Length: 451
Image 1: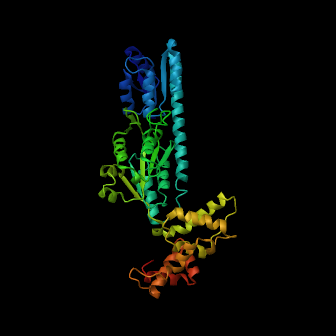
Image 2 (image 1 turned 90 degrees about the horizontal axis):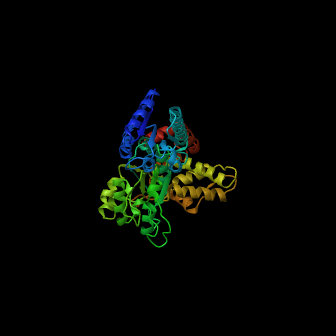
Image 3 (image 1 turned 120 degrees about the vertical axis):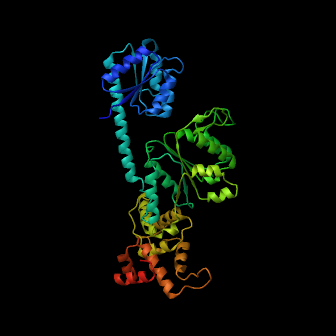
């Protein structure tokens, strides 16, 4: 069994020696530090199960040391040692997040029991976090519906990069589900038990966005009646999602770049930078490379954000997902309306699959919800929006790019493809809808290279 490592921070050499011998005799690995400053370095270099620190030391004291440790690891378990005369300070340390305190002179077994209790709590924390992560993994993709190859590739990439700290840029048209992908990354990461905070960079004026991201100090501007941490610091330990980052003004892009480079922010009205530990995921519906060429987006920031790139395809490029999405949204509508579920007719599914959905998944959800409310016992073509019906009515007869109407053979090919998409590529169902046997369908698909 791997030994737990205990960090001892004590500026008196004799006390350090006593604590080391006692803990090693009890089966622990021990790392010692003669000051809070060297203790911080040791904490960062070792996997520490629990920390024992004196409250009164030259230089940085135990309270400030506790604050600094908690900034690095909010779950760190710190036991404070104090003299009887400074118990009030120890109580203050408990309020700041210390696990427990012991008074000097202490009974060896009392201190050892406190350490054992701290490590037991640490293991419970870990087990609880592992269970929550496993549950999150089961439901991570519950709102991202589809089985197209392009979506499966995104699922695979999410699982590969989730547990890294790399910045991620998600690109895709409005309504494709970029925030759902960002949440899936967060829920699959080691940060899943902490905050996922999101902000739309195009929805706030520049001055307000800066304060929202980086925080501000009291009195820094009219209306600043109290200090504000800002989203970067509030998301420490978790994930910050910057939606529509391409809308961010150039002046703020400079500050965002510095924040990402230094992992620190300077609140509005302050000259003191403050460290943060948030994982950044950004999203945009713009082509940022084109924005860079047109000098509307900083090139250095683009490369800083684009460590891992994901592109969410528009719905028109994954029509095979439309039937699954439509059923999902119909079920969701029934739940929202406290109603029984309604089936979607095969004609309605074909009509939905024929439309190009410029608003993507969000537009499809709105259309299905509308149809659910307006329809009778089943969702039929007549309950769909008129523009969806019209698009389906003209989809097979629409002219090509040069203005020519399609041939009969091309019409057949298009119809086969759309029927297959409407039933999720289920060839048996498609053959039944088309009124042909399965071997005939395979023969036609082979002729059109669609098999």
